[in-house]
Image 1 (tube, rainbow, N blue to C red):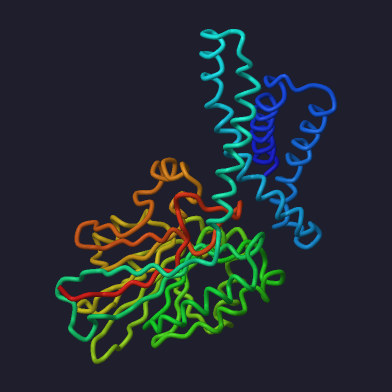
Image 2: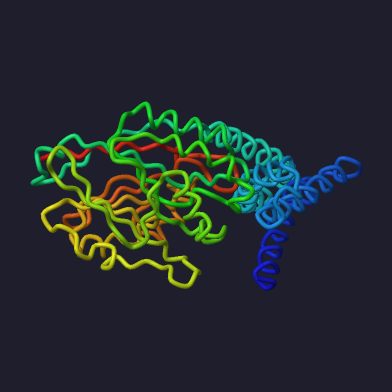
Amino acid sequence: MALFAVIVLTVFSVIHLTIGWRLVGSSGLTGAPAAVVSGALFALYLSVPAAMSARVFGDAIPRWVTGLGFRWLGLMFYWFVLSLAAEPVVRIGASLAPGVPWGAGAAVGVAALGLGLSAFALAGARTPPVKRVEVPVPGLAPALDGLRIAQLSDVHVGNTIGRDFVAACVERTNAENVDLVALTGDFVDGAPEALRGDVAPLAGLRSRHGSYFVTGNHEYFSGAPAWCQEFSNLGIRVLRNEHVVLEHEGARLVVAGIDDPFATVPGHGPDLPRALAGRPTEAPVILLAHQPVFAEQAADLGVTLMLSGHTHGGQLWPFSALVRLVQPIVAGLVKVGETFIYVSRGTGWWGPPMRLGAPNEITVLTLRRV
């Protein structure tokens, strides 16, 4: 952990020095204005590790510090990327027109564009709209045609998301009158003692066949066994490498769930064959798996529809390009073999309360017979 902290702080130092060079060093800013900007950047630099340590120190870190740190994290990203992008422009411009203050112009451009992108991203982090998706299932039993599943994923209750947001999501989900609710992990960033009141509205989820939850990697960062018990206390069925068989209008449906591969607790960890063992083979299978990396295995084992999250759809453009390097599917409905995979962009957000190019969602999926 000490080595990890050193690496993170080193990376943040390089990022802040790059931004400082663009906004102060190469801009020609001097005197009191330069001192003010440099001091502000140093204070913001300190706000990021302070915000991230809130998971450890809880309420000892004031909420305003956490909010500032995570908002700065988003603006910092855009200012850093734009600072790098501006460098070749400044160098080429200076070689073509030496008398033009290219450094000062680049500083103004980086600052303005970064603020504009961040403002749009902040506006994009809101109570999620309902996204409706139809899944065509060959040979689906007539009784299951029209069955509706609400998926909530990656809410990340904790740093910048609290009870009001959760309650609004529950209200919107209940208004859809779905047949079952799938909660596909990464719901919390913190211990149950700190967030119990914030997640309490989840007990109000209503559907014909109930609500089902699987762990994400952030549950394991926050104490997965305790959270599994907490969700059970809220009346939500936790699926850990197991399945349940539902009866719907005379037809059977399997709902299965697996642990996240980031499991660090003895006895935890994904085991898809175990989760599907003994299922009725004629019944379609809905699999809840936090990460879409299980797509190929799910297809090999005859899963009908796999519901995942984890990617956030990239959350902040252009992160989606980086997500594609580690996940087979970034967002949306994709068919792998005979299996449909739906990857949610997430209901909340992690870190910066920002969304750009990857809107958050409450997803309602409807099975259709074809």
